[in-house]
Image (cartoon, rainbow, N blue to C red):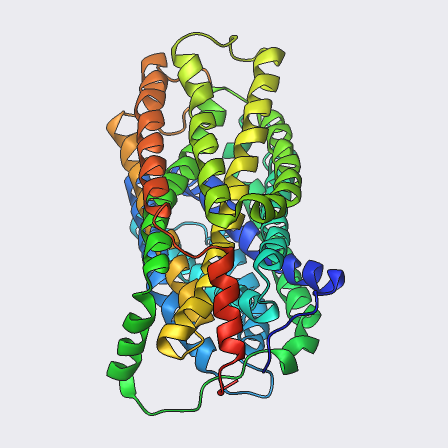
Length: 476
């Protein structure tokens, strides 16, 4: 097959991106609600919940390379990726519904087993869709800047999908009632959330699979079947993943994902107890992220064209590191207005809007950098390994963000954060300690990630040279 030189139709780019809604909904649910739901609402110790989330993430991360390798080598009349995408739709929805609707009357041990089983199932089943779907980007286009544009839509819909469900959850489902004066502690809200979220995930997966189905004849064919056995397959994986630029992304992802996992899990605690937002305020606060995603999608492709992906990613990452902990630092220094004042709320909305925009832009550019590794590796190994690279990158993000989630549960336990806590009723010293520990740890993680990212070596000229070299290859 020859390289795809024609620009992708806008409709295809949009439909492809819509599939990321499923991942966004799942990721937001795991990051924002799962620890609070099973700990504060259902009563599991925070360390148990954090450990369960970490185990689910690590097992899923180990599963990802298997899915990636399988989708790189699948022989079917629907190509390498689409059979996985279609097959995942219904199981993903069913497993996600079960996660938020555990049977009543379970003991703590039984509830932990149920939680761990369903969390692992959800993450593994979404990987069956997400890894093959994400692997389509290097196949749909080989153009340096167009890959960034396509991934911008993917991240846009992923963020909008997750954020939309978060806003719906806070504004509609997680509302106080006579028995539950704090909305985020209302168990019925989580049951309704699980039902709606599951349906949206299935629709998004099917829309993306159907929307890209016509491109199957233009996509890469799998390599000829070879009976290399497990040892041979493992050797191929190691050979592929030794790419120097991939190792730079891999190591950067370890620390960035630990920071992201820590931040996402503790975020709802900060919103509820540190800033003392109500559920309605949290839903409005989340609305600013819609603007963040829209701005990121508009700006990231321009950065790719002007500065290149590496310089752009490092620049916006540095800005994000400076922005993210600043509100907490200002509060610890008593330089912000008091809680429950409108001026504080809108100051925090502004910080959040810019900070999230920078994080999304960095993620878009980094993901596009991973796509460009495909041709660099093909020259060295003679194999197209989109699925392996996407899966390996996903592995480190999931496994290490699981460590970040687990670390957040340990942090909450270490500072003595109470269960069934009411906003405004927690010891102020405990709340202050949460900020004092969290902010510097977050900064260190992100700075180490940036240091590794600086060793990535594929720029525009290198990528275009790789594409031209492969086009001249007799095997094409």
